Image 1 (cartoon, helix red, strand yellow):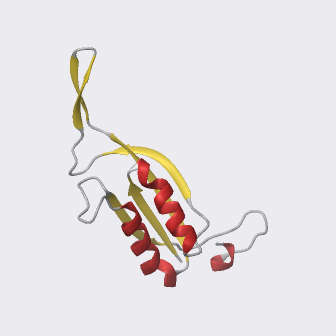
Image 2 (tube, rainbow, N blue to C red):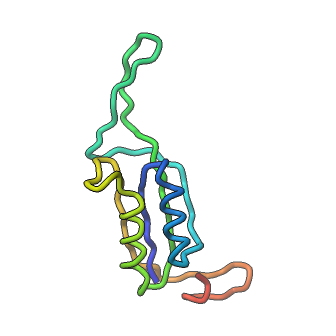
Length: 115
């Protein structure tokens, strides 16, 4: 079992959700987060004063899947979250990690059956 964590731009959330739904992925957790990488924030003007916004709004997706779905899920997320043909700084990142155990609280099912 694997956990796919993706950090994407907020306006790409619906595109990614629809693309994952098309390949049969229905269990997704989305969290509004803030962060920066190479994008390094930006400067804004508010009421005549200039200030720096270091942390930019992002969405963190967490998807628990069986191991044989990883390549397809990563491909779908990266395609749906990419800005244009070339992509842009700030499009996001995808992390894949191992899941040692999963338990469905309601039924007590464990392992890939609980996904």
